Amino acid sequence: MQPSSQDPDQEQAHLFPPDLHDVRHLQLKAVLLLLWVLVSFVAMYFARDLASIVVAGWPLGYWIAAQGGVVVFIGIVVAYGWAMNRLELLDAQAEATQASSPPKGHG
Image (cartoon, rainbow, N blue to C red; front, top):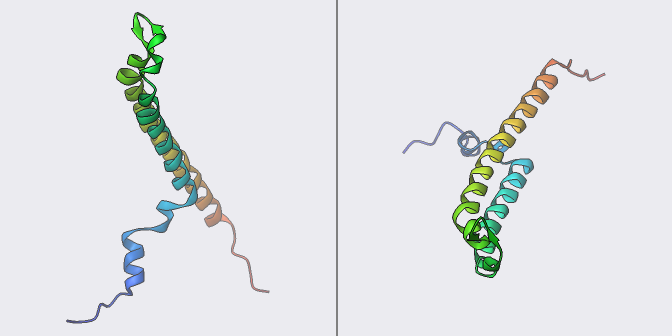
């Protein structure tokens, strides 16, 4: 076996760029995942207790279980796409600003 001509750390960095997981992206994912858990599990847990509230002839628990989870999930997907596009745009603008600024001299 021949030793690899590339440094393994550089090879790993190339396969999985660290900027994909900066703090903003991780916070966004954590918030949306928490929202999904709340709607999927917590709201469903209390759906039976909401049966006393009737909306359009059906118990509120039914609406949450049958429709609310799907609507919120679609909203999460849309919000994630919008937020990621916004973050990428901000990153591109910051990179363009950084590239257009003159380099600082050493003395």
